[in-house]
Image (cartoon, rainbow, N blue to C red; front, top):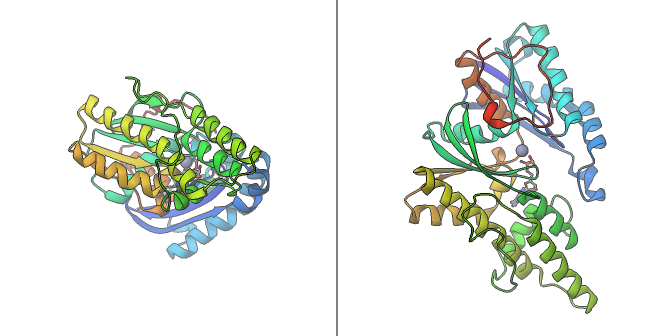
Length: 341
Ligand code: KG4
Ligand code: ZN
């Protein structure tokens, strides 16, 4: 069964063809970093415009690389919940038109559920229930994945997401946008104990996060260096700042696993590409008897393959989305019922 997955949540235009839920025949992701870099963050209007400009080409490329054509598709899947509304609308409109013209089922998916399924796609038989720590520019969540279509949010950020804070502090340091990867690279050469950053909510029982305090503390430290005409040691600063974020993420994910009795933790979302996070979560997870899984780099950020994989399982469970499905900027994941047509 061939499914075309379309993902236009924010500033990545992505389309993929996946066969039978696990064979990735193509996975095209066109980024817009070069457009938003000069503004230091994603400009929603520009993001949506560029989505509209390139989506047809991205879909054509996904089909060409997969060695297939529209006529061979069995379903069209799209993220219709969670992201920048006008960006999502571009993908949803295209998916509706294709499903209608090709007379194949339309499968709408929730963006976060797509990220959860990036690990199902990468590892095939991920155990349920498990804990998914999903960390990106748009969200930071700890999810109890009870089974397909059954989710309980155990923790979320009360302010900024971890990816947002990495990007903002990277900008203060003049590292460009998005800066998570640059921080990751610098951190690998630095001393994480060189600077002292807070670990908000670390000692408290809650599984919620708060990252804005770490960001403010980083901003003040940079300003204090600048005002004294001193240069920040980038490697040490990045290592210390990143470690403050990782300590909280890892501690809360491990607490969630022990509170729920889960022995599998999955990592998903753009920040799951972080080398330190992957390594330390595996190490600390194994001390607690937990298996930690993460996707390959090609499936960490927004991509169409995770959309097509999730759609395969929804389709097999009898789910179909109506052609008048809405595009929503946010929707509760817990209500993501796999409805039958
Ligand atoms: O999932 P994603 O592509 O888009 C959202 O849904 O937000 O995630 C993008 C985020 C950005 O904040 C980016 O800086 C971060 O993922 N990121 C990283 C790394 N690669 C991307 N953060 C830390 N380390 C990385 N290697
Ligand atoms: Zn995402």
